Image (cartoon, rainbow, N blue to C red; front, side, top):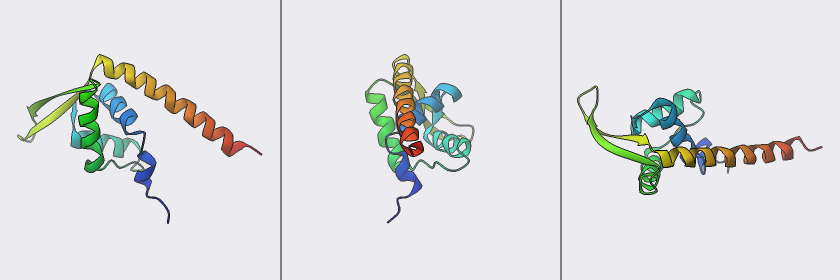
Length: 111
């Protein structure tokens, strides 16, 4: 049975969230999902069931912080921001991803 495209996100969600918060600034959960979906030309779709546990874990690890704010539409939403510790983790995650993709590329190009 083929895996869904969301299965490919496993292990990369932390990298995607930290990078999004680093480049876009504070966002609520829907804003994170929407940004990742739109920037990836809808190839990556983060489900709430994956996002919110990951955000909770990243907040416990000190990589992000959150606060409640009123949105443009007048709703109360938890808004997430990257911390200095999160920027360090982002650099680490990016390096791990770069090494992994180099390795996969080498295997795929082997003849």
